[in-house]
Image (cartoon, rainbow, N blue to C red; front, side, top):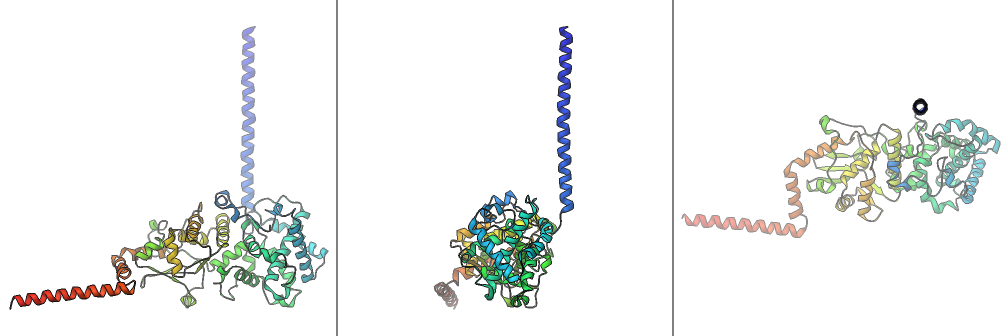
Length: 457
């Protein structure tokens, strides 16, 4: 009886274990299938418009404040930051009232229009928006009207006095928040809201929203003053949000890779030497000006050109202030998440290799490439060392220019000429000393020659 009982116990134990394995197996299979269907659903629903992301942790962890709004939240991803702030909500509400006045709409007409845009607006966000329809529509109205009226009020004299007495003190902070990837509204929404204003106001009918935004970014940040007046011929339907707008403004026409004269094995490895090393090899730095683009392709703030004839590296002027890092980090994050082209990341990587020490910064400042509004050169070194951290650049778009510089630096005569100029022609006293030494040498040779001639007479 004891044996039979033991056998029965073993059978029950085995059965229990088999059942447990089957339960776990079913859960694992169900989880895998669920994950596969989610990925399939994502791939099927992916579109160019689905372009507003939460910044991935590898990028965010380098500098979290560069991606999160500090003054005002825009859109659903950070709405919790200010939804209970009565001051911010009151200001957004006043901008909505101003918008209704300018657009000559009543509340019902406004809500009817935004409801029609609600589903499309949701599709711009990669993260699922866990908000009821009425709450999401209210957010689109409050935040959309705020952005549009804030831009109009900043740029058009006629509307400059519309409730800006409070927010002008935070204009720099608002600008920084408007260019953060997680703090975005769909561009089509902003464009549609602006069109409602423009259709009712004669002073806005001749100004496109693209032109108005271009003017705002030029005004708000001196570092974008390179954009020539009238250079706003981008198609509004091709813009996803304000980060995308700035990216297009900075990179259009897009920098295209040029591999002529470079072997395939070199494509991933040719980056510039540091500014100091290039300078020691006889390469000088020159800021690009309008005359450089005469007869060439249109100006782009990511262009780099090396002239072998004069040993000159021509670059755009880079104004580095307290908003530079935020703008570039968010454009890089957008490229990282959404785009195949990595124009901004390439430029950041180019500058990372070019700048390694304070001396590199000083050289670029002296030659007019960098305007340092941060203060210490050490801060700029740290900035470019971290700007592309955890970002992979598959193709170096500057490989041809880097290859040409590499070939130039191989010629020893360039280094010798540079050393000669620096050591003997760098200052008037050095030049005088060199001439005096040369004269002394010539006189010595002449004296020796005369003595030699006299010896054989």
